[in-house]
Image: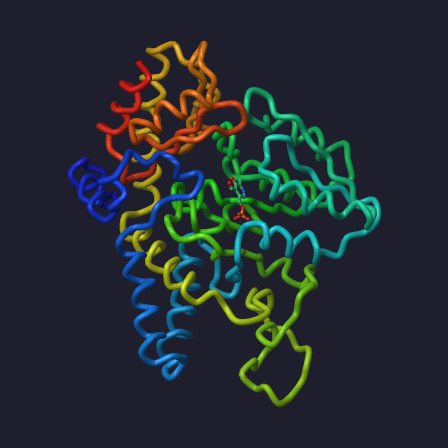
Length: 383
Ligand SMILES: Cc1ncc(COP(=O)(O)O)c(C=O)c1O
């Protein structure tokens, strides 16, 4: 058994890496998370070099870190390094798939009405190309597997587009089961994973995922504007990049010979200069996640959210989040009877407890660096 730092002692120690803990109880990691002092240092390391030496040591300093971080990102997903591209956000990753896939008229995309708009509009935008988006209906905050299976059997689905965790209710989708169903029906599987990468382990190979996108600013605890896009080698040639530039091609430091020989891996989706400071930040963030172990982080987050859920139930709150085996996540959505979610959010904010309102509920999303005491503070503030 690997040694996980699951004792409260160790988690307590991680709090010192998050200066935000000295300011408030921060329960909006599913929105925009705070960064650690490690990420702060990485951004300063980038700036220190840029301000002193500019691009003088570009290959050794900047390129080396970009490729190191690509490797670390691939470890997080159990992907190969050449299946990872840096993107500016989740939406861009999903858009690469939507705009670039070799669609045929009559193809269908399956998604559902629990999804964040980023995973709806790219597919709706394909209507003019003869692609129909089928919006399945969630029930009680979750999308039952049987509903997906039925649609896969009865329709002409080309691609299933779902989130790993639904942003409003926090329902965790069973990616392994969904991936198995996709394989059985010859359907592509595209995952918006921003609400779980960094919080729960994900194995793109085991789950049969073809495409996955996640920006860094939620559970990975990095900054906005720099995320990862995974494109499986199996399907890379099905996608024609719609934006192609100097960096998309092989030998892209030869600026004298024009050619359209695309990079063999997912690097072909990086068309121009990278978001280097964002990649420095992401690298430090992923290093911390891997150091703490993502499985252990998942257990920790479930322990914190279980504590919150049980306190909410004791207070008669209406729970909006499915919490059955395998479907709980880092997101807990609730409503206090007789109080609007906006009022609850305001009251908590006044006590330096940061939650937000989403999809008609108060959404609290603790990460590993939050403490049991902070959960108890939130519950006490509701009384
Ligand atoms: C499920 C989901 N997808 C995507 C996003 C954001 O996408 P992007 O990284 O493009 O800003 C969010 C943000 O709240 C989200 O919850």
